[in-house]
Image (cartoon, rainbow, N blue to C red):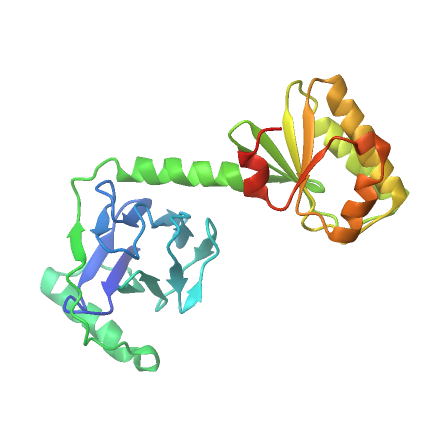
Amino acid sequence: MKFYLIVAKGKKQGFPIPIEVDLFLIGSSKECQLRSVHEKIGDQHCALVKRERKVFIRDLNSGEATLVNGDVMPPSEEWPLHVGDLIEIGPLKFMIQFREKALSRRDLEEWALKCLDSDSSRKVAGAEQLDQLTSFTKEAANASEIAEALINKLNARKGIVKGRLRIAREGNITIVRINDVYMVEEAELNLLKKELHDNLNRPNLRVLLDMKNVKRMSTTAVEMLGEFHEWLKSQASRLAMCRIKTDIQEMILSFDHLEGVKIFPDKPAGVQSSW
């Protein structure tokens, strides 16, 4: 099956772009296979990923929005794409299409235009003459490797789920998000404590505990965190916390065994600060 981006807006409307690699990078930098210089297009803006006859779009956290059917993708997320989906990258707009059989160049362009014409429920105005679509570069042979490296880096930052925890790395910081909403039941707390010990049983760590999901916590849970803090110190590791709800923060600050643990309002502050 062949996969195409069809330009859906501007003077190049109806132009079909074949996607013949497993990782196809879109952005303004010279490494991208599809390059467009515009203030709303990031250096490495997004990537199209082919896996097992399916296609996905991955936002590369460039600081500029990627839209699918009008919905803004969260930074670094990956969404599946389907026939007829519209993606927007800055001023550029494309329709996603698939074909089983190859066509001649002329027939392919006619087919692409028919795809746009038949999608009357989502027709786009062609009044804007977009000259920003400057290159579709076959010479960027290393772009797939660059896209893969970016995706691997984003996956590392997003982290992997291990039981009740999501563990990620940013620089020399190990970010541990607790997925539990309620830290109350003693049996659940014992399991959480075990997972913390099993996954962080290494010396000289800087552990940033992300409490975003936790809405309620018992005094037993606070005591468990105090014991965890002491255990980390015995391994020459350090603990900090972020994104804690106000009432929970008050409990934590009143507990002696957590004295000295820094609390940050968000993850970037915790990652960038010295502690």
